[in-house]
Structure formats: structure tokens, C-alpha cells
Image 1 (cartoon, helix red, strand yellow):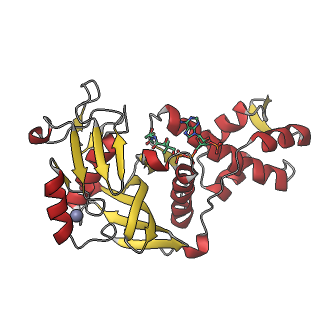
Image 2: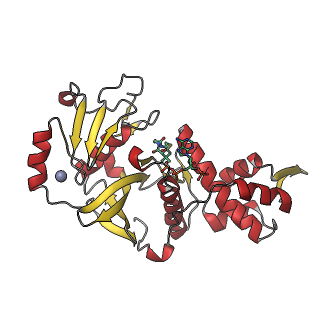
Length: 281
Ligand code: ACO
Ligand code: ZN
């Protein structure tokens, strides 16, 4: 893989226009050199092509016939849809998405080999089309059992539960594959916060149901969460004891209830019955 270490560079693009939003960017992104003298870029919200001038975008919108991301719609529930985009079949879209995402991802290295990735693009749909709220990428063949490479909720949509929805979705795919998964490291602060929140809620719910009588292995089988992530989560909740050289779950009902009260309730659940998907081969 070709790795590019642009994260030490200074921020170039200050704002982007995407759909009905003007968004301030967070970090540097390695756009092709001819874009680097512009403070603002205009994105087509459907094909993610970007332009330096508003008039160019307006002209583009008159002839762009996409109304949703390319690829297959694999989930629809109410106004939420998820599209699976194969980076090999939709190379330009994949690259555009990476340029866009890097504006909000700091220490992630950007892989230009989009061929090797699938992109799961979450949209809110209305009569004007399907508007991207966020996405995650996933390596087609991961050696480290990573089920998610990069995750992003676009800033106007953050803190509404979409991040946890995307995370939950990545684990539902892993369950269908019959594999455990873990996010690619390093995690950003916000990434860690979201994962911690997701792991905590999922694990606490199961522990409560089973009154604590369950092993880490069983938890991992049920949730597709990697055992190491279960261990660190339960350790941080002080639900683990180390006895005779082994980690054992000690789920005192009072401690469980205290944590459950404190744990955030995700409003957006993945309705698995609405996921129509077969693993990539
Ligand atoms: N300050 C404090 N807490 C926050 C903030 C914030 N700015 N943003 C989210 N949270 C908390 C929420 O309270 C929530 O916890 P809770 O449910 O226990 O209350 C949890 O984080 C997740 O919130 P969501 O609304 O589900 O997540 P959101 O849609 O905001 O997306 C994400 C989270 C994807 C990490 C988003 O912040 C983002 O895109 N950040 C920029 C890119 C990034 O850092 N991605 C992760 C990199 S690591 C990797 O890709 C493997
Ligand atoms: Zn377009």
C-alpha cells in the first residue's frame, strides 16, 4: 500500500459546500495541486466531484444525473438508506470520498488504493435525493480482522446518533460474515468516545439480561466485538477481576445498573431485518 503522510501539512481548504450545507473543514487533505490555491471547494453532493467555482457546480448539477451514491442500496428503513460502493467499480467516487473525509480526519493516512475498499455511505433521503450524512470504509480483505477502516459523520449531522449507527452497522456486517471485527487503529478522540459508548451499551445490555453469567468469548460470539475490545471496555467499567491468572467478569447488579443509567441511549437502531447483504467474495 502506498501511504501518504500529509498530516503534518498545513490546512489548505477552509470551507466546502456540500448539498445545502457550507461546512468548515478541520484538517489538511491532499487535493490535487490545482485545487490548493482555493479556500473553498464546491462538491456535488451525489457524485462528490468537486469544483473551484460555484458556477461550475451549478453547471454540473444541471447535467449530473445521480441522485444517490453509486452502488447498491443494501439497507432502507424509513428515510435512512445505506449504499455499498465498491472502490474498484467506482474509483473516482471512492477517491472523492477520501479527499472529502480527510478534511475531518487527522491522523488517518489516506490510501489511494480505493480498489481494496468498500464504502458504506449512509444517506437521509427525501424527494430531492439521498443526502450523505456519513460513511465508513472497510477493507475487502483485512488481515487484522478490521471491520472498519475510517468512519465519518459530516459535521452538520454529528451528535445525532449517526456515528453509533455506522458502528453498529459495521458489526452487523461482521455478524453476517461470521467473524469478529475491530476498528483500524489509531482511533481519534471522537472515534474512541463513540466506540467506547457503543461497546459499553451493547455489553451492558447483554450482561444485564444474563445477570453477568457469561464469558468474554460468549460475548464476543454474540456481538462480533473482538475479545480485546470487550476486555478493555469491561475493565474501564470495573466489571473485570483477575483471578488465578484469568480475567473473569464480575457483574455486580448494582454496578451494572449504575453504568446502565449513565450509558447513552442510542436513538438510531439498525433494523437487521432491513439489511439485504451478502459478504464480499
Ligand atoms: N463531544 C463530546 N462527546 C461527543 C462529541 C463531542 N464533540 N461527539 C460525539 N460525542 C459522543 C456522543 O455523546 C455519543 O456518546 P453517547 O451516545 O454515549 O452520548 C458518542 O460520542 C457518539 O455520538 P454519535 O452522535 O453517535 O456520533 P457522531 O455522529 O457525532 O459521529 C464520529 C462520531 C464519527 C467519530 C464523528 O465525531 C466524526 O466524524 N469525527 C471526525 C472523524 C473522526 O474522528 N472519525 C473517527 C476516526 S477513527 C477511525 O476512523 C477508525
Ligand atoms: Zn454530480
